Image 1 (cartoon, helix red, strand yellow):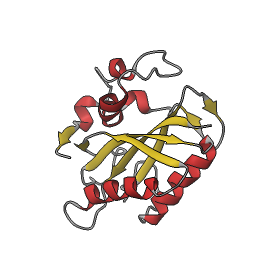
Image 2 (image 1 turned 45 degrees about the vertical axis):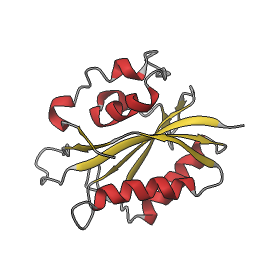
Image 3 (image 1 turned 180 degrees about the horizontal axis):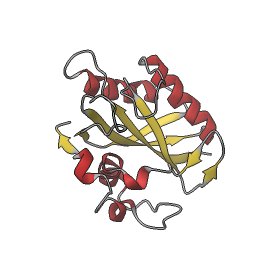
Length: 172
């Protein structure tokens, strides 16, 4: 049995200008190499201001986007593939909201709701994040958020962080 899933991708630690965009594009290619994963569609990429904790040093802008996958993996297996892919691109989990080479978040897994120590679906902060909702609305406008009961397109109308993260679509 297969299931449609939505993931978010982000990067802000490429070693040179343009590397973050190369990283997220390469992550899509890497995910498609798994026989249990089919990439259905990918949003445009967005340049997004980094939101940091108070008194944290400034960070470079992020490149963010979303993708819809079809997978035969169970949610925790897919999460493990996402973590493994992050590590392949040099991700080190040092601090919350820290800069990163690659961030992959499992946003939605069909209409499932999961609340375990390892995984929470839908992603608990996705409804507040313009850098998630804007690209997700491009490719999954009619997907109903399993808890809010509202289409992604409606959630994307006025995300809480729109003025602070200021996502701008860039060419694909």
